[in-house]
Length: 135
Image (cartoon, rainbow, N blue to C red; front, side, top):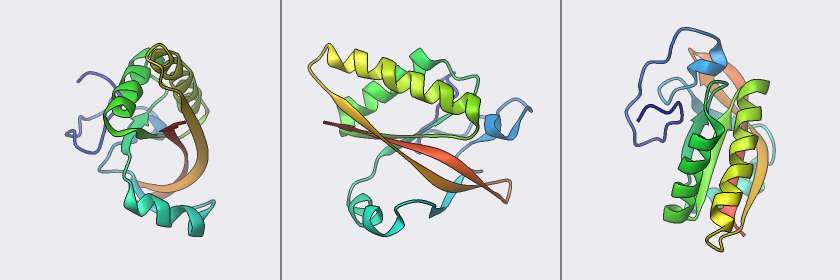
């Protein structure tokens, strides 16, 4: 897959050498602790696992939207992670596009944003986490 979005079951593909937000790969970004809503939300999430899609500034929103829609159709929920303003902008646009894709099939989705701490090259960074679920 040539997209810059990856799920946990796909192998890592080396990213071009640019900014840290462009380097967010599965081997580099491991959730450390939730920055917001730690106690209540973790119990429910332990029972359900969402496929994690990582978005960079160079991700195409329409391609990410297709990945989100596919994961929602298959699992009923997806998780999108981004670091930085540019990556978060692409992720939000992708959620809006995915919503329109799924709306044509009678599926409505909601997006719940939160913060999550991730480790990138052994350095802790705060990422935006978008949990997308069927309404």
